[in-house]
Image 1: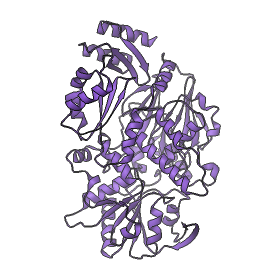
Image 2: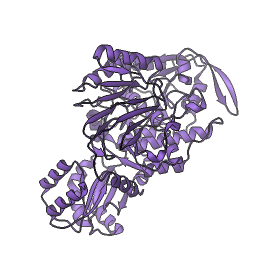
Image 3: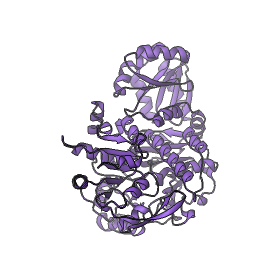
Image 4: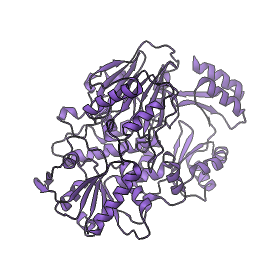
Length: 612
């Protein structure tokens, strides 16, 4: 067996027979005490067997004594929290210091030698948030060993042959919303994404077509591309229905997903027509089963499948999903992708040597959007115009990604005379807090600004509601960025009611509005809207100006999507389009055929395609 071969090599390397645990994330080697060994030989073993190896120690101080020792070593820093994991021999340290990599490089060896515990440092967000404080404990106090051991035992050996590969379309094909698909080989089954439709035509269309799955017990894992409701809001429902396996995502995606799922529960609680698909208990179960993977970290997730996440440029932690089957076939799912520079992120990763089959989003697959520079200029110009005439600007925006892009645009375009308060409402503060924590996922410019204490998320004109009523906020000219982005709930509706008859104010759309949502109806020209008012409903006549500014989208337009496909060194044999309105996905597949000479089409939900 593979693990036995590795064990023999490690025994020879250390000169002792170490205790070994084979987890899905890598092999943990436990030595009785700290010893010197040939690091180059260890690196060679890791490369040859393509397995990460972590060295930990058994002669550890008790946690209470170790905590005191670590605080003494790090006395010059503010330690916000500390959690010890006896399973892994690791101590997780949350600290108020922006450059945690610098601290890690300087103090890791000293902490290991002094306590026996291996330190893993995590940055406290510069924006205080009760949510991020609770998530630190939720991430590191959970018992994830059972899941890691269970999966590790199933993939003790690798399979190097392929009988077949198929994909079943469960949601998000020829539509936007409830994204989900089932990826299968003879040895593996993986569910990729599990979202909820933002405006389902019928209640039955809210969830992906999970009834097509034979059994949740057959699934080897759930793979998550990014944290937006149409990709992650249905995941706790699967755990409620009995799924008990691992779920793979990047660290920011976990925290943002929980934020979205809590918001979903909040909306369900306030809606008289909405059932609870799951509870907080099911969200906690999802957290307990989460395996966190960074960009570029290739991991065996079954006997024949290796998973790697790559930057998708869409939102914080968003990933394209790269599945290598038996080292003979590569499946690539773009996820929601931005192949262009934005204020927050670098363009999506494009260094793929080969991809045999690609599933690509096509939200704007039939459009060429204005440049980001033009969009920013249009927004600032409209904001100044509205403020000068004494109005207020209301911007419905997704809490994750779009809100931060708008905040950065306002920040970077503010001149010395800027005196316009910018209020954020909804989940935007918590999402911005996570951006200030996971700065390695941002582009280098924004990361440098935060490291230099010039965070655009802590601008002097940026304000939270802080107990103010919406009436108080609207007494003066101001900019309000509020959720939800498609106006299908959230605080934006309360601001809309108060501003609806103000001809000087302006509603600015900066993101995609899914058909069926209130945002889509207003964007299309509807000026009579019915909104809940206390225990009843009332019709509002919108007299405020309504403007759409394209170009801020976290999705690529047609040209960017085509360029991303062209960048694959060995072109795919087959491309499937998804995540777009029906006509758009069909048209974009035709465009790929005509311009790239690649076989492409637009599957529908419930279809199953054989890839090999």
